[in-house]
Length: 448
Image (cartoon, rainbow, N blue to C red):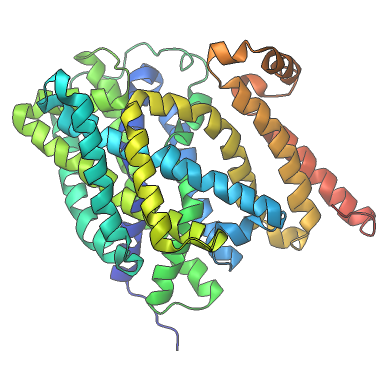
């Protein structure tokens, strides 16, 4: 018999979901957005909320609705080879190459670097990264306990510390919301906020964490797909509301901080400045605990998700061996530095995000076209081609001067919405409607 969950059960799973999502970027990117957007912070924050919490919620929902075990099976609706390719790329982005190293480097830069002499920072970062991921891996080795670790213990402590900082910032504001915005927020605040939401990596992570949420609900007694979907929506709304409030508060804090500080290189620096202003040396200790908790709980979830999925895709290597790999690699990459990791991720995200978004939307609307493979395939092919242009356009100036890149970008300039970084959207829609047309009028001829 299926168990009916109580309100506290939804709160616990919602807390788990929030804890898994809310890591390094979720603290620093809204602050940076607020500083750069200035008086346009409301529009910029709206865009950030759409991609920062709206898309992750849809991603979790898509995994639940699909009735499948995870993103590998879901992406194989396009093809088996594409499923392997997309899942591998996605997990490398949210795993050892970008998200995981960023967790350690953010923790170090905000929590420990202010206490250390500059001559020691490189060595200290290396040792901190190794210890950070070793401890996270020891907890991740028992995936069944993740609800207890994150939802019941780490997350409440984190929220108490964070809301203490937010409360004092609004009781004693550093400034108002009248500062002049920095381009491109001057004319495209909403669209810029949308793209800034990509940097949290949460829409990508939702495709990885979705199975953790579904598994947690199943362990609590929810079995039917329809019941899982309803429970996912209720639990997701808990996390959605809390994340929306925090993102908005952090964005406004960033804008208000311009009354005292100049715009910083990244949100980590801004967070350190704000905490130091209000709490002094004690504030640095509070901030250290806040950031390490935020990053640590997300690291546990990412290590678990990566190791479970890669042991499924490449079964010759066991879960524990993949866990060792995904523990060592980010410990090395974290030493590149926070700003460098953020900059390196941008072109990759501009390529991967359109593929993730279209897959999420296809899964959620799949019943409308009777799960037809041709719709998945043509929409994905069209999106893939446009996403290549978006990724190339986000490369550093030196790389964009490479002749083949210049040639491709010259062509891409003619695509609608390319100047806004959204050319994949009309191209994906074109592929989608062509697929619907072929399925309707030439069903016997459509094989890919």
